Figure: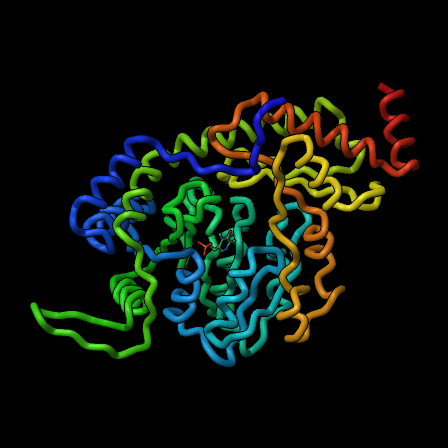
Length: 393
Ligand SMILES: *Cc1c(COP(=O)(O)O)cnc(C)c1O
């Protein structure tokens, strides 16, 4: 029996671990020179735009909304298929999330439906690049410009993804990334925000630490309510060590994603109705490899499939249930049936193992196991379709 295969696992090299030990011994462990160096490296990565780091990829978005002036009475257009942080931050600043259903092919917000959801209260669009597959930036920004809306990109999963040959973050309005351990690079916890100019960068620093501005040796003022969102130097040192591997990590993810497509094609699992992600080998950073189970052709639910995968030594994940069906959001007036695409995908999406240290043999094992489980639970009708397809070959 092979070792348990998790759906993701961070990879920290020995040089970074030694670097963290150095920071711990240095006498300066909270925000300091490592944070400055990490911000400079990230800024260089996104073509010189200002970047500030924070202690999560959630507060980065909350702060971006505040910088964009989004508050009470405002509506923010976003996707119902994301980590709940995406819409929680909208509530946190006192605004209202307005969901727009997803496109089944990309599983991202359906850009073609955005304009119909714009009202006189709309102030911003908050798109999410699910699994690292970028939302169409041309269509998105055309709408934003036409309606004078700010865009806060929840690019938490999209570091290293690109649009028309340019890195996500190097283009666009306010762009937020996360460095949670599941993301393509990590600071353990953390995130960063790409800003438009030094004025926005100064505001970000204020919101990050109690609204404080400093001048001279002893000057200090506070003119807005900020929080406590600064990243430690220990975390920033982890991030610097990780950023050096981002390109090779993402290249490895791409190779493994290609292996998934080839393997799934070979075993004919598509006949069962399993939906694969969009085969984008150019723009996506392959943050996740997610399939959508064919619920109408299976006699069991996703949880049973996950339990059987787990029993076979393979971890899977759910990213994500539809946000508007959570109790908090139902209390705000959302209900089942509002966003049928997001609901279907939210019930059936399954994240398969994908991380840089994985091997091609692991991919084959995941596919074989899932193939066996899905065929064992195919509805009789679905099995016949399958049998015919097999006979025909
Ligand atoms: C990870 C993630 C976040 C939040 O990031 P944290 O660093 O965990 O706060 C927000 N949105 C999406 C889509 C994410 O995947």
